[in-house]
Length: 308
Image (cartoon, rainbow, N blue to C red):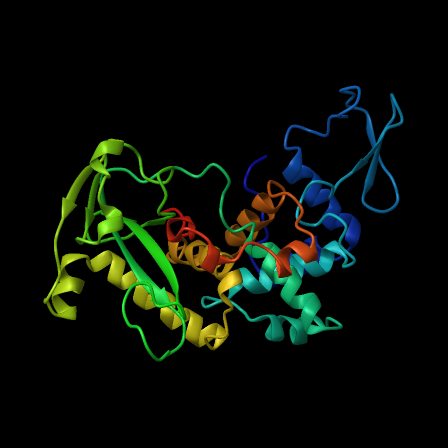
């Protein structure tokens, strides 16, 4: 399937004015070579009522939204598409409260849940690893707390960032072993948890910053500090800093999706990417979202920052 998406709001309204049109688009996104029956491999498929397709050969019913983030939703696919359009069309994103008002959703909880599901579709499965020279450092996210300062503050979440050097440009990825290609050149400060990277196959350059000014640290790892600054500004501006630690991972997913596509001039293409990736991400029940993995209980290297 070629990258087919609406270019303007008028085209969006014309193409996705009915539920059937949305289902047809989602079906083409899931099966770009045409729908194949998972039971008999038949290709004679007919539409049914609802989000189902019927195999004319074995009579198996195929649910278009099954296995995607839209599975078991109580909202029409048209509402989902409108939310994705609103979400990708605003440079700084949108809050759940704002989307609830724009889309006329019945409750804040509904908007919040849908938004968190979409954030899970903002990181491409099987994304490429960073290569070449890679800066690595960390920042802390959270409000002002008393007591212990610096790394390890229990009132803050530790976010590790890896940024690939590309001239003066920046690209983001998860700072995990699977995110940076082996034999890459990693540049960090002297924090103890970074030790041992050489044994894993990386070239590791350490620049100790003890006693140096903040300006010196920024000059040493400029891409990391730029990303961290933009991240904190986005969390405070769009979400007023009201981010709970257990959901921070998914706000990071949204931030990196936006950061890595900040130069894109096509709103429609961003819409296309989220819908495409939403077909590749398994469904997430509400109970798992509200009681999911807590970022504060995870190794900080597992916190997500996406591709460049």
